Image 1 (cartoon, rainbow, N blue to C red):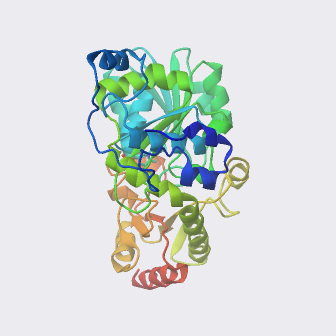
Image 2 (image 1 turned 90 degrees about the horizontal axis):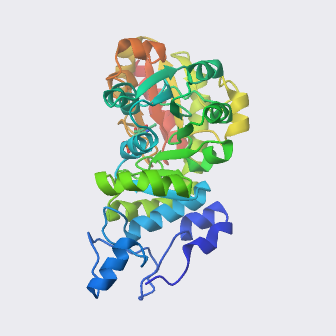
Length: 399
Ligand SMILES: Cc1ncc(COP(=O)(O)O)c(C=O)c1O
């Protein structure tokens, strides 16, 4: 039984929305969000069931369509993002796939930035063409390439910013204008920016997707994803896809992720403060030949970052002199920072993109994206920043 309309709270500030937004309570008035671990729902009469199914009676019918705990998660993140509607999915990749599949049909065309997470590139380059959707990849930082790539049948433009793993930043407003000039939707994967530092919808994007697995959980527990957009598109295009193909988030994951949202601003702020200190330290090291950190004045797109983002990043990318061998020696000497391909976690994690997250895209694509053998991508956590710097210092000695 709902005792409060979650939509009343839309005027709250983000930190308040993330603690209380979307909460519905049962007749017991529990403090914490309830975990409705149920597949289905029962109806007192056959007539009532009929009305639920034909939409005359609002409510839940089956957890593949919607579930009260998942709905709380969707309402909470929807408020933060300033979106009209949201659908939560089982993983970030399910969200990316859902957003793209809902936007296109055979004969359509998609333009995407080359610098995409490996699995996102697989969908754009390999999967969509199998179903008759052509795709063009562009250098996302070059606005002229986006302009040249769109066609009358282009239905979706897709980008992530900052990019994984080289932390390039793409001008979302400029790409949104190009998308709208041909009647296409701009889909932004906002995972690296987090909802705390970048609001793609307010910059002109039509759809935002997240891997909730990253900062939103932030404690390494479960996978999740979400697609946010306008009510009409979510209802007419996204919802039928969810209902009939089954990528919906589990209630348990939604419950974990609701708790993650409560502490998201605190974690992202502290992890970013730690990351800034580590980036400044790495910039001074002779063994580090390249450092990319979106919070530093020497980032190649520092002006755009100022316009488009409200904070730096929890992520640091850097290149070690000596290629893969030196990078591996560095990784193997670390003790606190753990080798892992996940990111956004309370624990600092580091990955060698060329042999992990971006192994499958092949050598040529890696060269094009500046993913060298010496490149490392570090996700900074909540440990004491000095302990992390000590760990890095010791590992640099091993290089
Ligand atoms: C930018 C980006 N998008 C999407 C994903 C996919 O998320 P998930 O692992 O939750 O499916 C990832 C995962 O690393 C990512 O880095």
